[in-house]
Amino acid sequence: ESYLLFTSPWAQSLEDEEFYEETINAIGKFVDGDIKLTHLYSMLVTASPPAGSSLADNPLLVQVQADLALLLYRYLASRMGRREAAEQTHSLMGLIDKLHRCGDILLNRRIRLLPDDTIAMEQ
Image (cartoon, rainbow, N blue to C red):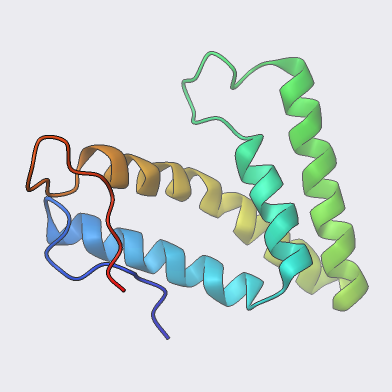
């Protein structure tokens, strides 16, 4: 199942489109309609600035990230085995940097038809 809302070509390169689609599909497979997991993961992503950001090494933010990652793991462990929960938590954490790249693709590397073009999703 595809979670992609755009019709190709929408990004400046096919590589960007494929990267975006693969990342969104991977996250979709992990969360699989689980609203609580989606919210926990969204909070973790929101609290995780891109590498190189001036906030990336903020000790308070690093603690919030650790707390949210632990909460994510505990939630997953309540629904599956501890080993599988640890693997899934690790995988979701690994997708955060990819999500930052997806954001960059959406904001900076999509095809713009007009100078004031906004992100338009097809209905």
